[in-house]
Length: 126
Image (cartoon, rainbow, N blue to C red; front, side, top):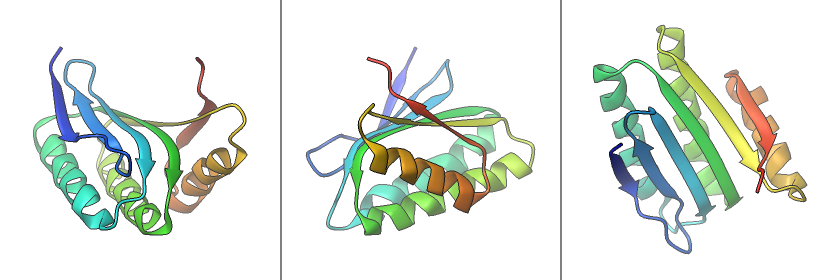
């Protein structure tokens, strides 16, 4: 299974990687970059490229914290995914949160309700 790193994880930026073979995109870590567009623009471009050549995609989002600038861009990513789903592409999104992290859990529910895309909001199992 080949893994493509779209964004290296740092202290302030989430790691974004795609595992080919299992068709899974993982966004993980803290998202508080000074310039969120520099993180999320390449992701949006990757999603477009992916759906031009492939059908299905599983997305797992595991964020510890996200600031408002990143939140806006992540919502745009979800809307792009929704557009592809409406065009018949197979898509599943899972939002994972730590057991005691009610704020991140509620944020996942907010994205689900705001984007209109089915998102499974689940507790992260250790």
